[in-house]
Image (tube, rainbow, N blue to C red; front, top):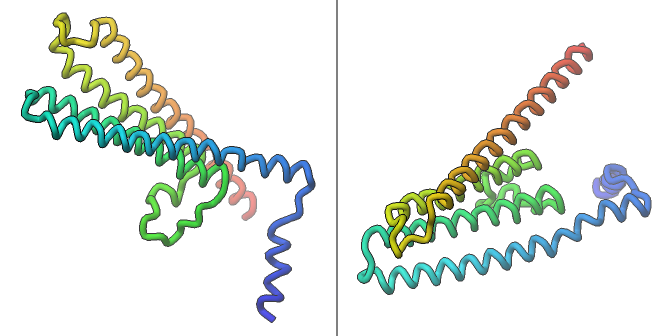
Amino acid sequence: MTSESQAPLSRAASPQLGLFPRLIFGSRWLQVPLYVGLIVAQAVYVLLFLKELWHLAAHWFDVNEQQIMLAVLGLIDVVMISNLLVMVIVGGYETFVSRLNLRGHPDEPEWLSHVNASVLKIKLAMAIVGISSISLLRTFIEAGNLGTARSNFTESGVMWQVIIHITFIVSAIGIAWVDRLGEAAHRKAADHAKAAGH
């Protein structure tokens, strides 16, 4: 009796779509190969991390402290890019393709419970700023070798890297500010609707 009464309710909750709307809505599954490709890229980054870690462990006695620091910063850079990939894969799939049904799972990411396109955009922007910060820190550490045979940077190259990093920061602040304006407008409209209802 209960299951029979629930069946019409579930059917009513998901309205029948026409052929063209179903085609448009179903096109979101075309993104699945893109996320699979990002998973493959994640595996490549794992191999890169292991290779760099092996190189560091095998040659730690041949290098000085500065070179070890640069190698560790390189490893951190790989980890942060890998974190960015996880955010895009999990958050993007959940937002744009289909629910992952992770509610209640012990390993459910904390940010996934309130993820949407705006939140994902801000998190991605902040992750890119973090990756850029690590790269810039590596550049500053190596900047002491400017003008020597060991240096891979020029003064103008360092300057452009700083400019690009500042651009990332300004972009992240702009995205967060626009999102905050949108939230404020949405709250204001909701308050007006509630006041009109009373």
